[in-house]
Image (tube, rainbow, N blue to C red):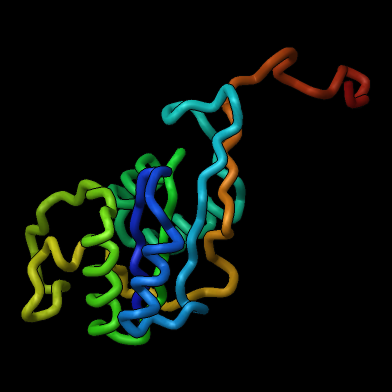
Amino acid sequence: MAYTVVSVFPVTADTDEIKRQLKENGIDEANIVVSKSNVESGATADNYQEDEQTKGFFEYTFAHDAEMLDAYRRHSVGKHNIVVYADNMEQAATANSVLNRSGALEVYRKPAENKTDIPEGMTEEEYNGIIAKAKNNLYFLGSERVYHSNVIRGMDDPMDDLGSKD
């Protein structure tokens, strides 16, 4: 089974060094995505709109867990994401370990009531950030994510009553 490992880093993180460490631990460069956040002026962590590519990635990746979808969306605004696509659980665990040692931020995950989805031999903390989903060519993070402000300046409706754009 294929896995996706999602991590969030502060903007001060040396993403080139983290990528180098992942490659040294056997992760193919083609399976590593470094995505940097670009928050337009006027957008805040509570008042923003994601670009369509970012929205599609998060909705596809966390479709099974609305709480994690919301947590990763909120924590990713204004920060860097590193996503690793792994062919098996061993590779995913290695990537997750490298990312955590490199300073990945902890994204809240409520304790699991039913821990049957966590592979044997792994703790819940080790498993956090690993999603049992394969790489999808339609839903991926680009190298830069853009967050637009939700604040509407001027008229709410860009059309006048005759159907003409302002």
